[in-house]
Image (cartoon, helix red, strand yellow):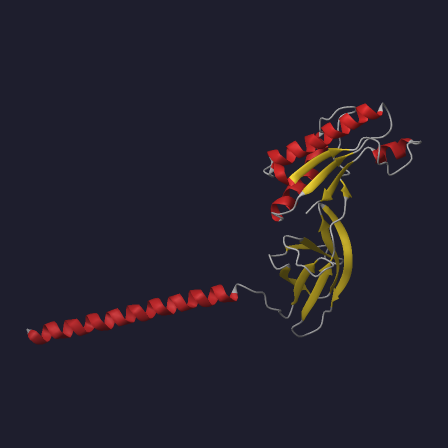
Length: 244
């Protein structure tokens, strides 16, 4: 009777040890998988690209969207930099890629790189330096003589919203401009109202009001002569300027 009880206790102990070993093995496997998932590795068919984006003073630029457009496959691969201005991606071998960065909401070509189709594991480093500049929102349009947005404007404004959500600390100025038709006073009022309309749209989409300044400049900052229809059209514009 005593031996039977003792034998049962040994079996329980063995079973408990087996269960604990299984749990520890599973935990190690999960941790190992998570560790491997933190970074990319080059393969026989894809090269590893380490990207660093900074300003001209070598300060890292977080939340920057970089696009790699393949010339042969026509595939676009996009990445967004982390808080240290870095990102990684795998690029298929045997293609040439146009590298573009997003200046506010506009794509700007920066350089071109080639990934050779050769055997072996390849790792490349790419450093991109740029400072945001003023851009014109070409597809942000208003009803004639009014400050109401046309529906065609929403796509480009939504892109701007996405950029500002990626860059939490970015502050901008919305600058409204007109041609010289009408009085200077009316043009100043119209440009201010249009800039305020754009600001209101961004706020409605979740951007904090303190991050957006709206200023109307009327016809005081033309980019073309107002002597042609085309020139007037270019002067009627909405610009985005990065303040921070």
